Image (cartoon, rainbow, N blue to C red):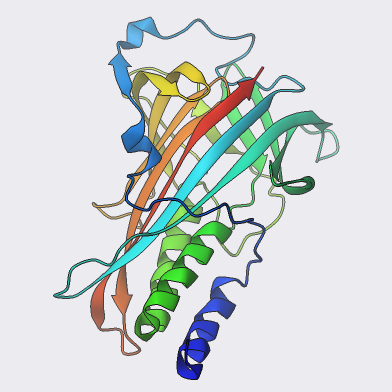
Length: 297
């Protein structure tokens, strides 16, 4: 790699990796395979066949519950008038364990604490989520959504085509804003928030919808599916998430929920590539999926 190429990549790598790199790379695998969601064999089941409720709600928040999910994150770009580039792909996993309880606000609600670790570095806690669930729904107090894996994938894409490095960086900023908004967080707001995010609103029924964060994003219940995963078959609630005024008609945001928590995810999000003058020069897209690969109640 020549000096100019190193400089161009370094210019992108600094803003891309500014949020910190907590993802350990997993051995490269074929990039010809489709997203996890394509590989899964899911069949729809009628709403009437929804499973009986657990002790409280759909999701298992019992102490000691362990769930592993495996991610696939891919990015590519399509310059105007040219075919799309090859997908640049990263794969990694997370192990999520309910480890205890916490009451973050004096006199407030008590939450179950879910810790997330990289199975390659289990002593290092990457994320600490606070969840509670009652007959009204599933609620989250704190969530960190820094998309470090997506930034790594975008940096690798820029390395392959350094001429587009600055355009990828600008497009990725749009992708990150969309992704954060999907989950009810703005990039500028870090740390614990007093408002809760509503992930599920019970009872789930046809045409149900609710605000994740009021006035910010909207969740839509689309139905139940028997979802076949490496961890077993789960009768899962499929939801679609929209951020009015931000997500476009091509953006796809779906999430499946069952006893292990979020059991499958598929985000496919688009942004324009632009030059320094704001002229659109193509399209940048990011595809993120995961699926549960093990579950210990």
